[in-house]
Length: 206
Image 1: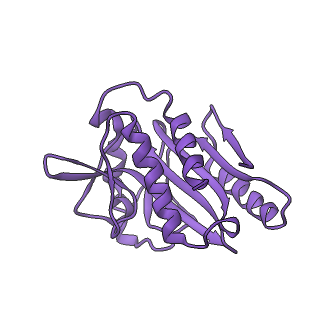
Image 2 (image 1 turned 30 degrees about the vertical axis):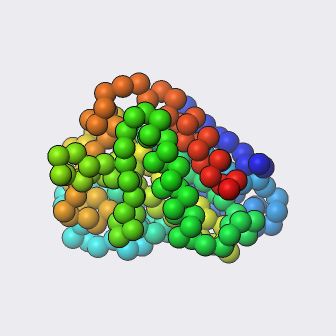
Image 3 (image 1 turned 90 degrees about the vertical axis):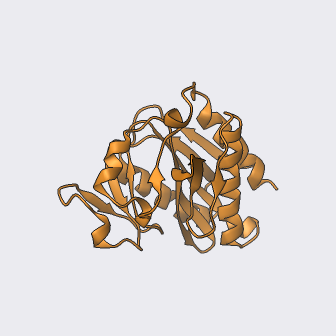
C-alpha cells in the first residue's frame, strides 16, 4: 500500500502538525503526494472542534485552540499517542461511517493485543472501557473531510495526566469519565504505536 508512515520521537507543536496535514491534503488532491499515517505526541494543549459549546470549558483560565475538525473539546499532552492521517476515500468506499468504524476497529484490535477489552458506541464516537459499571473513554476520534480525503485522526490515552480533564467536559459528554491504559492495566505499552499502524493499514486494505 502506498502510504507514508511517519513516526515523531519528540513532541510536535499542534499548529505545525495541522499545517502539515493540510499541505499534504492539497498535494494528495493534486496526486502529488502519498497518503499519510503519522504517530506523535503533543505538548499540553486543549483543542475545540466545530461542535463545541462554551460551557464545556470548566476552567476559564485554560487556553483553547480552535480547529476545523469535527467534535468538541479535548485535551492533548505527554503520555498520549496521537495518530494523524490523510487518507483518500476516492480510492476506497466513499462512506464516512464505514471509515469511522474502521478506525474504531483498529484501536479495539490494538488494545486487545494488550489484553484490554474496549468497545465503540454509535452515539458517542470514541473507544470506551467498562470497569465496575463505570464507562470511561480511553481513545478519542476527530475527523474532517475535504473532497473525500479524510484527515485529522485519533488519540489513545496511555499514561497522560487525567487531572487535566477536570478543566473541561471532555468531548462534551458529562455522564462518562476518561481513563488511560496504565490505569486499566499497568504494563509495557512501548510497541503500541507499531501495533496501531499495523492494524490501521490492515483494515484500510480490506
